[in-house]
Image 1: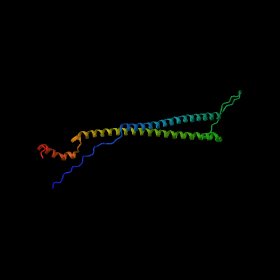
Image 2: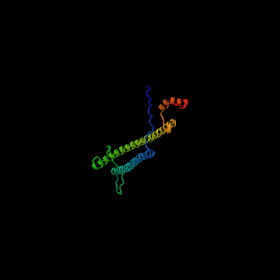
Image 3: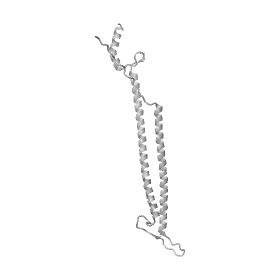
Image 4: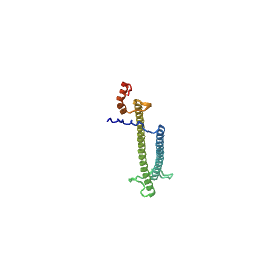
Amino acid sequence: MNSPITFPPPEPALKIVRPSAEKWAATLLEERRRLQEDQEALREREENLHSYEARLRALQAEIETGRTSATIGVSRSPRVRTAPAVSIRASHAPFHEDAALQSAWEKLHRAREILEAEQKNLRDDRIALREQEAFIQDREAAVAAREEQVAAREALVVAATPHGKAGEQTSAVSRITRAPFDLARSVFGGRK
């Protein structure tokens, strides 16, 4: 008539599988190496843009000096000295009739537009890279804090769990349900 009492099995041990510290460090080193390579590539690209800009400025200065010397007419006769004749044009682009010069100006303006666009892209890439580095550092700190919390919890669980026979861990439910029987054994001295 008395049915046997069955107790639930003990709960599984709380072991969180996480990568080893060496693996985690290797992953972080790889990520940092990739970020440094990207940063170095961006730095090299920026240097190329600066040298390109310097060449464009030199070309523009050369064109400007060529244009001013062509517009100023100086009399070279030794006897007669006249004031230089300055040609002032109302139009924005000088030498409308010279197609080669016009195409050179168009190339210069186009190169300047490309340079400005590349500078903007480089600036945006730098900002994105800084944001990504900050995010990775925040994530790294959060993961380290989480690992510390889990380790502390595991230590508390191990410390709070009394060891049963032969060092076995018992669950809280098992301890509660077994308590009356253990009390009876201690009071009656283990008689059968």
